[in-house]
Length: 167
Image (cartoon, rainbow, N blue to C red; front, side, top):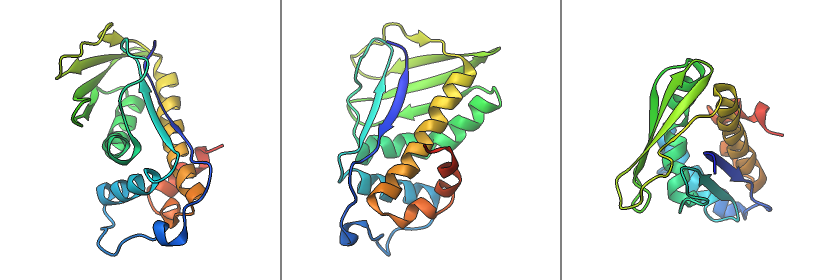
């Protein structure tokens, strides 16, 4: 099964009390992502990753999506600029690093495990354009999910710039 990551949008809004952002949450990117993922974790939203011989990685929305989204801007920039980049999925139980190595119009994705699980295959090679489309789609679904639950964070930067890609 080829590498894929996606986000299933929640089906209904959260209560106004649940959606309000805590004053303790900073406005830096990592804090906003963490707060947004905590809210989305209270819904039926689903984060999915598969590939490297595993049909469903054991990921959740509240923590694992936060880890992924914190690193998404740098990952997207690397893919767009055809530059080597990586994403570290350091959550306990996942503990995998994905290295993205451009090879012309393709991107080699190397999966390195820090657990007993071994990827098979350890390298997958999607097209660079397809990979970029998948990642921008994930970003768009992220902001669309915030909109569905009624969170004003959907209108905050950088999330608001991702909204134009939502369908």
